[in-house]
Image 1 (cartoon, rainbow, N blue to C red):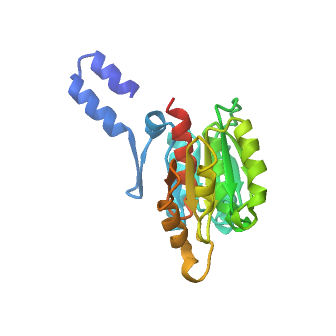
Image 2: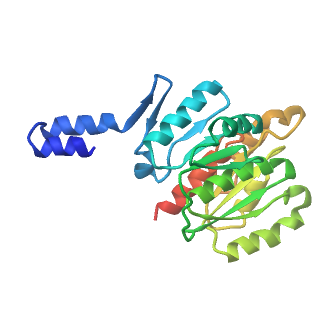
Length: 253
């Protein structure tokens, strides 16, 4: 960009040409494998992330190498199995990067440096059951990467609803700006939470269930049909999307 601006000042480019070159320069292209929008973080408040399951391992390695060479931001890789993480660490661990992997959330964040900041807000994260924790942890990693403090309480679903109320009261007292509520089976918990609080609730249906509830579709439909106002619903097992949406709420002020 500096080179483009210098050429503009020197009269080698007109303003339209400079704008076109800057827009083109915002996309990093890696050997026809991936195209990264390097200014997404500046526009939206959160950088791009790499969804790993459908990618060939060699392509994933190429993306990591090229991104870290050309970008100062952290690189987030989602839905990354522990086996793949161990192989990445074996192949790239000698580089001067910090590999921060959450095994339960299956998220890898590759950092060039540790940046300590005071949290900008608090987000409450709740699960109905223990089986939903991996998706909640995905949301927690994203919330914390975006500069918020996550207050978590797991396994407090409607099967034992008495467990819910003290935790909700604690989070409200802490001033959380939004709730992320993960639930499988019949997906009832976000509706209950939304009926108790006056901040946005983000429902995350999980693929936990059996019979008609297998795969999370029943939980998704139940959350979309909620009679409690103030609920937004993300896709099944999309803890990443829930975390980013919570950050969007916080950053919209």
